Image 1 (cartoon, rainbow, N blue to C red):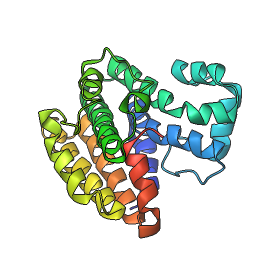
Image 2: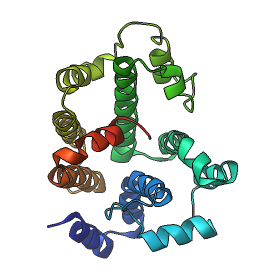
Image 3: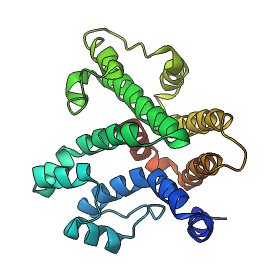
Image 4: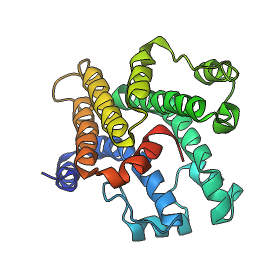
Length: 238
């Protein structure tokens, strides 16, 4: 079964409220597809919208979330929007924290923190300015404040729950393909742990399965030539 076939089954069988939760799970893909559209690159077919639907949505702006319409109003040119794209993901995660619950809340908190930890690790490894890397984040957020407090340190020490992610990064950083696969496997394991607290046959368990399906689907699409690009996508908002 492909993810498209799974998505079609969900559309046919989930209740409207549960279908909205599934669509929320795919929202990051839609955001990446907006960037791909601006760059004239192929879109990820696993998103909620086709290329034509996405173009129409951006043009009309009637059904877009407020953070996206505000972004489009603030940055008018494609060049400006691409440069400020990380702010779009920062806004998305802030909204997710305010409105989502259950598995989706846990999942997006993990995805955000994972990306931030990897961004910090990559910044240290490449000797890049972590303050600039996180310029669109809220410096008063405790997780962000912890990263920024280490901006002048020779090494980044992540929160205890992400120590294993740092070990993984250090061990695989020399090989983008191996690092990418290791991060996918890490995400898969963490999602499985999240699912353990969900009731059997609940929508939260269904969403966990779909999240793992997406990871496995992307795993099989990888090849060495795309490895470095995929690592960039996994490790940062850009």
